[in-house]
Amino acid sequence: MHDVIVHRYRVIFEREQDGSYSVHCPTLKGCHSQGGTYEEALQNIREAILGWLEVAQEFGDPIPASDVMQETLVV
Image (cartoon, rainbow, N blue to C red; front, side, top):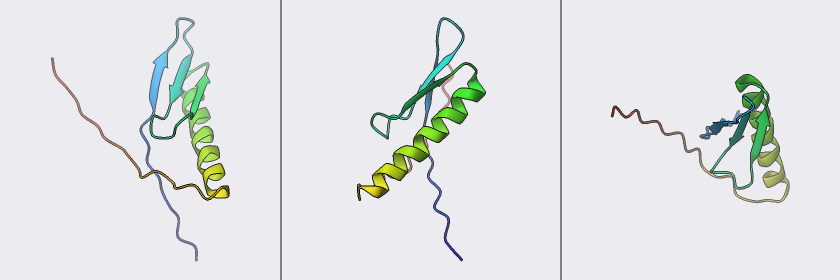
């Protein structure tokens, strides 16, 4: 049986003027994507992260630690 490694990374969505979304993962340098809808952008960044991790593994580069953080501010 193989151990499954789970990574959790923060992603940041920005809504564009046309209603589409740009999204990036700050922890994984250069990991960006986009989508016409939030759901599409979410799926696309998931694929981009998996690709980023796969390439890092192939080249023997370190995999950054998960960085999930959340804070809610009331102002």
